[in-house]
Length: 212
Image (tube, rainbow, N blue to C red):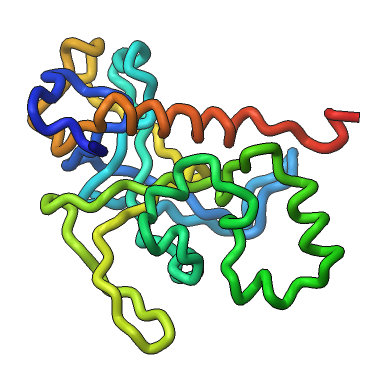
């Protein structure tokens, strides 16, 4: 079960789907030097239909939330039968032999295949580590994706850990005092745990020079 349907928490939780929040995203051209201002910039103000709470449960409060927005899934994910079978498989450790679409695997040399398997940990590894996929739900709606001329109606939505937004809201006082009316869906304990583990993997990766 991906969502908590029977007894959702009355408070906001990590991973909750929420609505009504406004986010801002600045864009600078070019990136400024240390002692100068950018030549130009703009700030895009958005009120997405839905957002996801990425503040840890015990840290929700102080009038602040960290949010991210939903994105359609990538078409390339549909080329992998393992993901096409269930797009939430992308949230979990993927066996090495299922991490690459068969047609791409067929174009690799034996050496490339061996190297790819050697780089994978025993039992598999996370792939597309920046992304986490939310399962379909009637509240979230669907959209179309075309693969090999065939149209697929998709109810899965992705979040990208590289797209984080900090918002301020006077009603977010502490975990038990938050604007619950904005809450749309709550993850099950298992799904929330998967989100936590993949987000941890994303932020805990080390640069190659740090591992020498």
